[in-house]
Length: 77
Figure 1 (cartoon, rainbow, N blue to C red):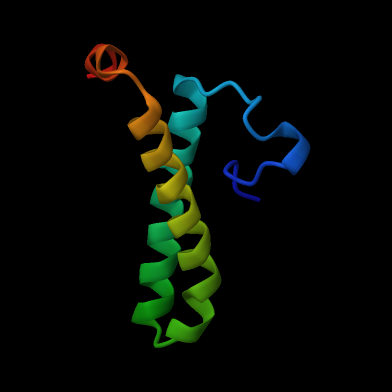
Figure 2 (figure 1 turned 135 degrees about the vertical axis):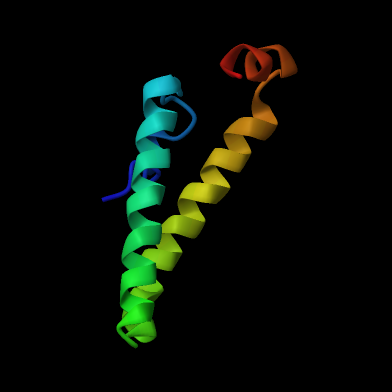
């Protein structure tokens, strides 16, 4: 299950650190590979679930980026 799935009682309390972000990026890489593989096999309908998880992860990462101060983003680069 994606690390972006957080129970309601934990929302807003989870610590977002570099390790969490890296895990999400690695998961997204794997999701993209699965999606491409299914599409290449002509099984596009079966990759929809992976597209939903990828979308959720990307929205989560974008939310983190938007909420981060500019100085934090420069330190990561």
